[in-house]
Length: 193
Image (cartoon, rainbow, N blue to C red; front, side, top):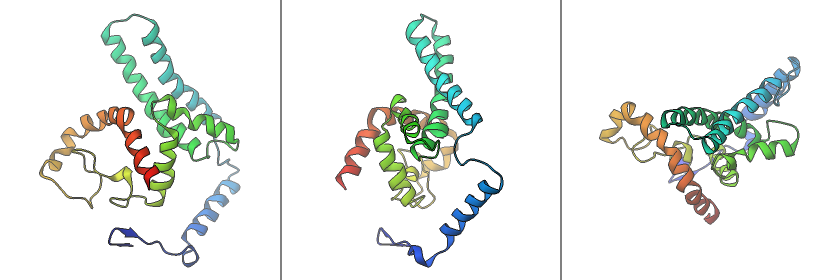
């Protein structure tokens, strides 16, 4: 419940949702004899995604090639970057990839390899996002960005009606903002509080 920009949560003793959910999830994994951590498929996916990012990068740096070939490799790198970020680093930074803390630390730190900051990510994602998930003006993940509207609870501008046309372009260049400026802005914002 939000009152004048402040958020109040139901006291954990007054709701059984989280303990019930956790119990059911744990039971599901136990009954089906499934590990909550990465299996062989995840390890193969991790190796493939890291290779999709690193191999083209090394090729671009070491072999002279025409621009069209570099563009193709950039596309492969972009897919690898997104896959590592969303499918490997994310799980490891949540300490869910492995039971081994060092493995989680190293794979979580792959964000640094991609041009981000794992320190900032843990503050922004683990603390801010998971504390205020999808709450307008509290969760940076759903805050509007430049001309992109991510939340139905923010002001609708006239140009948002055409967002379905321009969103792919602007969402694509958000990576430039992320690498050049976002971590510095977030570091200042989150360490100041």
